[in-house]
Length: 389
Image (cartoon, rainbow, N blue to C red):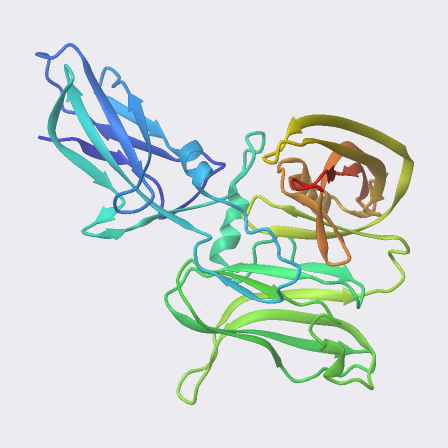
């Protein structure tokens, strides 16, 4: 007999959710000290952590490896200066070796979970539902055509706004194209146009797709017409013998240049492992609260130097306007992550949310609003150079 697997992780798991491995140890009453160790690997040989578990009365041992995997995964923070990206290491591979010990001695051969020969078969992704949420049905989106890593399927935008969509590829190697179609005020539509050719995309590659109206010169497709909205999607590259296959979409952008007179662009990591982009109305609401710290030390040249950090915080308010309850619930992800930013002049500025409030319009229309009070988190650093004359 040996250690046997009772239940293990799915091929790909979210690190914010429980990820459990349950095994059956071999029972032998001769031993008084029986336990199991689970060694977690991020590659064929690199050890991330070793977990310990005692068996229950039925000699079952269980390990929750979610927190370990969460430590080796990262969100793909948007790089505003890059329009399109293919990220090959966004999803992390791992495998586990489980060994039974009896009275401190290794008992029989280890059980390998997620390793077939030299091939690692288990993967993890940053994200997952917070503990207070009880439904995981939303993750069925990963098996549908709405495979962009965003909760939403449509958005209002202004023409000058940058916008990005994320797509996690879950098929074998394929040539993928991001495409767009624009719909005009005269009732016509343009022909399908390629935004970007990603070339060959492998399984679990993450694609970042830039799809702002001016950002991608979408208005130049038919410049004499007035665009009302446009759709973006991802499909395989067709050929004379093979028709294209839709892989993600359609995401609809409705153009509106008057709904955000004081536009505030907010982006935050969401539970699906990607980022959501929110356009809100906002303004500065209070004064400056400075915080200064000064330090003195001797530099390598023997001179006395001083340095200080001076932080200035201005509280800001941003409002969503009246939106659906579904969209409001989706935006709650902004409170569940530390990866939240204001986009200003194509730069990501990290923000700290100090307060929030929810506004209900009326039950008939089921419209709601949310106000965020936040401040930018940045530090101005001043110092005396190391070498002075």
